[in-house]
Length: 389
Length: 166
Image (cartoon, rainbow over all chains, first blue to last red; front, side, top):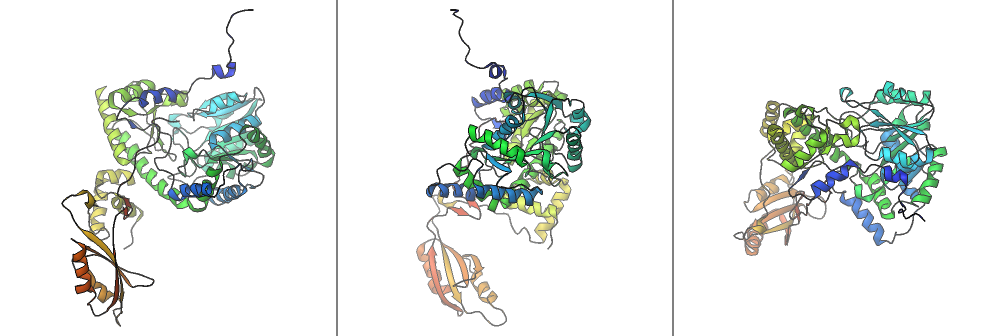
């Protein structure tokens, strides 16, 4: 027998690129006194009444499995919330699945709809998991680039140019991580028209939907005719400051959701029970918390965007989420160089834009989910860094 | 006074942190520094913003010995002026920190500060109870302050997030 060592890891996984964020995490984690604008989560702790609901569920002994799709009571609250907040109607018993964060919602959506070789059009810059998740589901990720000159909004023509017979879905995220860009009704309509023209699905990652600062949020599923072809992904992490609870949900027409439920039930069984009880409380009594958080984020967005522009880093005004995505092209550095030098020289952690896709090159993602004092200090240090170049 | 959206924002920001610089407020709400300062001045003039004070944790100060008591007071309201006259007679005392008119089983809730329990007791027995309109008083001494006006005194506010995340 040949003595070559057997490789245990599959070729598919072996070939996956590790997330570019990981490297920065390792670099920053070992340093003292770092101000981090690199965090992709709220700086709010989950409101107490929501935490208290989870504690109470534990005290009462609700520690067993829930139905695969999640507690019916929670799905009913989600249905009511989605109807009243975003004007989309889903049946709680058939069209809503509670998942382990929005990530697992995207994962089951992709694994449900993709046959080997099916293409998914992904608008980048985007969340680091989209491309690997498509590949893990056996699909092919076709990336199109939202450009800075269009305020990082994708144009329908750009998408139409890459549609093939194998295209199954378009994946969008609005408000976007990392650019903060939010698509308005008209822009969504443009994408919706394409979806119906070519009979495509849209996977709409609406995890930041609550965090819209200038215009009222429009869900892709609320566009006429799109309820039928949208897989709407959302969750509690961002809007309700519940990242660690790992709780999301996915809404889709029954044909798709019943199929997704198969994938979900075999892969995950159900989401964490105590998190689900917390989520019921969040939806029932947490809307005021969200409003307060939105106010606070809006002020910090205004502050950081203006500050970046003042110190010479051109920054568009993001309509949602909690990220600013300033250009660092004026410095002549690549985003990796900029982020690494900034971290080592001034102890400010930001995420280089290229980890979110090629079109993110020349930018850095700065989360403004930090206290005003931290933002002020970060801006001061970034200015000093730029001046030193 | 009817506040516009920006003025309301200014009040909210200053209520959380009275030392927020007007330049920072201006950036946060999208006004110029001059406009922001004008609005603040207007809010001060109209006594919407009454004063800027510090919240002090006196328990940290060794030299400080003092006690606070919350006192439930039942009073007889007077024709024409209701509770306002007796409330005023009470709040004029320097020892009195706050006075509220309450719904429920008693009428006025007052907070009194003194150097010692004795001093507070004297105030209640000599000055407060002897007022004509006062029917009865119930004094509760405050043993420890955990949270005051929305401020937690010993907050555990370490950022528990990982440094960089997607």
